Amino acid sequence: MQRHDNVRFEFLGGDDALVALRGTVIVRDDEMVLEVECRDDRPYSIRGTPRRGFFIGRHEGLPGDVAVEAKWTRLDDIFIGTWVEGGMDYVFKFRLPRVIEKQPVRRSLRDGILSQSDRRPNEALQATAKTPTAHERRVVSGTKIAMRIAAGVDGCRDGWLCISRAEGADLRSALYTNAADLFSQEPMPELIAIDIPIGLTDSGGRECDGAARRMLGRRACCVFSAPIRPVLGAEDYAEANRMRVEVEGKKMSAQAWGIVKKVCEVDHVLYATPALQVRVREVHPEVCFMAWNGGTVMSERKRSPAGKAARKRLVETHFGAGAFDKVRASYARRAVADDDINDAFAALWTAERILNNCAKFIPEQPTYDSRRLRMEMWY
Image (cartoon, rainbow, N blue to C red; front, side, top):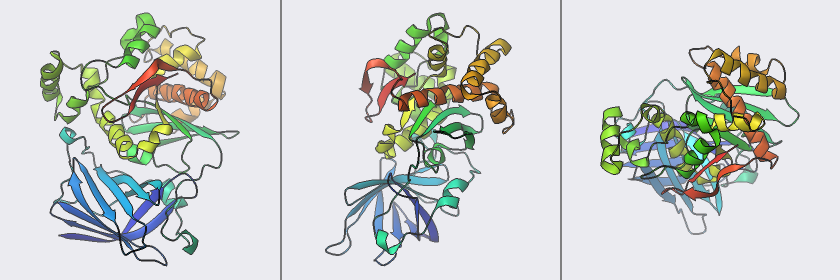
């Protein structure tokens, strides 16, 4: 058995400020118990049992107590999940001070959990958290959106580059090492457009990928097929190829395998917190740039000097002179490439269009995958 005291639990919703509570986590064989303290009331006590990669448990307490249902999983060094209390849904997360050795949580891509280490805590969340008042009692609250914030996100070598802008405010950028921190940033954007497949088929291609290729014409090669859901369980590229051959009779592209780790991150967070789908939308930068460029496909490859320059001109025409260079100066090139910055700006441009009700999406009738995630692409 392992016992961790003074663990910080952070709760996010959609009405008030972030709330932080303290408590104890007890880890036994095939069980994780959360004892979360609450001012002026009895603590929550949730005994989580493993089920398909998640811990699931309830707090029922004494007669008259409000029942709580919680579901959480491990993502890198964070545990993140959903907390349902009194008809309200919240996202909650916590970290343990050291790695738990005996636990039923999955640790490899076979089970959709990443193995990267040395993750940095979300300093913004820690700085803005507050202690709940007696008025809040047992009901935890979450992020307050003071103004509409749009964010564009692109995956990069060191994680996720996020460029955001609130109405009437300057551009901001941040580099998040994992999707859990990205999707629990404070203040939380009202709309996050992200370049990553959301919603995966069990076999066959996605309609949105095919529609994007038709839109891009001779640049259709920019849209490679999203991985099918079964290959998320592969340990390596060779196994992914074998699994796809078994399902579809053909091998998996190296490009698709290259994003599997990041697809797993986003897939787990969205599955654990379905309410995030309201704020998180999939984009493909080249489709966004085509719309941004007056409906004309960008003719040069994005990593070529001419392609970088053409996309940068669009960025600075819309977001202001120096917008690209300001972000470029914030990160080492080995961590964030030039095309990552351009792509994040294209996603931000689309996120603002979505908030202003002038964006479009493909296909016209989006479909859902087996986890009820929408398979669509916005531009």
